[in-house]
Image 1 (tube, one colour):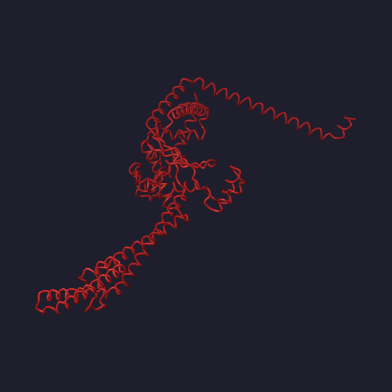
Image 2 (image 1 turned 60 degrees about the vertical axis):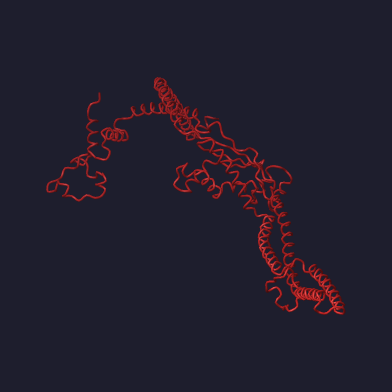
Amino acid sequence: MAEKLDKQNPEGNDREILLQLAEQEEALSEEIERKEARLRLARNVRIVWSQRTFLVRLGLLGFVLALALAFLIPARYTSNARLMPPDNQSTSSLAMAAAALGGGRAGGLSEMAGDLLGLKSTSDVFLGILTSRTAQDRIVEQFDLKKVYGARDMYAARKILAERTATVVDRKSQMITISVTDHSPQRAAAMAQAYVNELDRLVASLSTSAARRERMFLEDRLKGVSEDLEIAEKEFSEFSSKNSTVDIKEQGKAMVGAAANLQGRLIAAQSEVESLRQIYSDSNVRVRAGKARIAELQQQLDKMAGKGEDASTAGNSQNTSLYPSLRKLPLLGVRYADLYRRTKVQEAVYEALTQEYELAKVQEAKEIPSVKVLDAPDIPERKTFPPRVLISALGAVTGLIGGVVFLLGSKSWKEKDQQDVGKVLASEIWTDLKERRILNSVNGHAAPSEGTDASPEGKKHGILYYLGLNNGSGASNGTPAREQESAEESEKPRS
């Protein structure tokens, strides 16, 4: 039955046979390629092993050179400071909403929600302040980093400072780590502490809380009220000193009592004089003494009553008496009461504002995020750069790898055909480098034909000619000199 099928379909059998032969040939070629690859690998390993002394010496040379380079590189020290997270983590309603999205679960969901909403914690705000241009400029000016870094301007100094400063926020604990690297361990610690101080200063000065705005308003208002109070007190004191007024009400009571006393004494003296005149004449000593006492009492009473004075001039002229007269007291009382009331009002306002100001300062201190230092910057005892052991190991490994590449490359170069274009070109370049003919071409120029001016002045050359491009080089038959030399060398019998 199979013979019948084979006879009926001879073309299908031939196709299967051809496919089998192709598969066998492909498998054979793959096997040959694997064997050749193993042979090449074994040959390369043999070459490398045969030159192991050279490779070891080259590795030692690389190790020594790298170690010397590592000791020549200036050492750097890193000082670290760690800050506690601020107390008020949620500084806005959106931040609280982002925290609520976490469902009270600590970790990734609330942080992811905050990132999706574009919200940042107070630690991120602190991080932005630390990397701001204002903070960096203060650090540069404080430590004169333009001179230390050899920078030409503030931009270059800020760039170097940013490269040597690392500020990182731990997303889980929200702690901030400040790392400052410098060639001097003392300066590194001082710069890290300066970052902490500058952060505290900027947070306090740039706070936008409601308590801060209230405190600033009260502070400005207090300045105005203090000035008004000083003016009112000055006017009140000048008025009281000018008019001899201490307390108008008490002075009025005292002066009325004194006037009544004088009036009584005056009546008694008059009665006594009248009784003496009944007995003695007016020239009697006792009568004259009584009249004199009456005149003095009348003068004192008139003076106290302000007789002969213009009441409208009260407070405008200098009073020479110890106390103002009764006639002036009503007008002085109005002005006195006005100045007294203004002074008392300003004092009351000043006291109330002072109390509110102190309360606002306390509230502001509560609302401002405080900078709490967990780990203060310390003076580093060990350098952080350069890693001398790693650099030395890399130097040794580089020497070994370079030696292996050199050996394998030399072997591959020797095995190349002498007529290979790349090898011929490399030989020409190497010859020029050995003879130091880098910018001067040595190819022979084409022989000038008859009737052509052979002098350089007889031919106009372009700018490429003066730059060294040799477009007219070659022998008389148009073949370049290098190609002619290589052809002549190839025609010589090989030994």
